[in-house]
Length: 135
Image 1 (tube, rainbow, N blue to C red):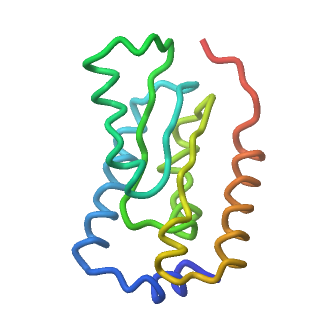
Image 2: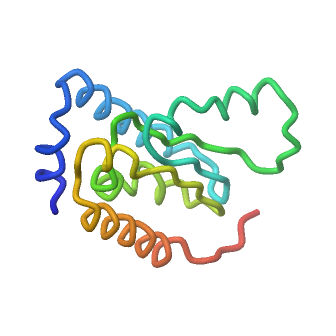
Image 3: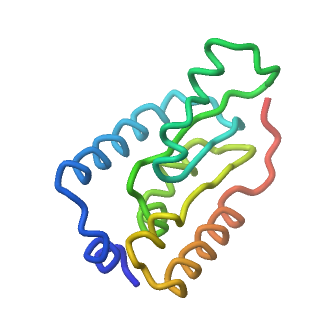
């Protein structure tokens, strides 16, 4: 199923779509100055609203790496596939934490479709995020 077909199933309000586009553009801009080899959290609203960047700024989490949050509310596995560069690859992360798929279920995307999308997400990560030495 294509992103267009998935969007038809999700029937998102135009303001949500505008918010998503704005956030993807913001991430693209921020990625230009991001340090490679860090950690990325990616997914839908549960990931987006998780305050990991605030926690890092206000608490000593004992981490040697920065965590970038690249969650976007109301997204599906098809959305993540369409925005892998902005949400993952442009960061060249050393670790990736993914929380995606609940909107696929909620929006009625067929299980076979979102599982195939998830498999493709993992395949692209495996191909694009080869082990590297970061300093």
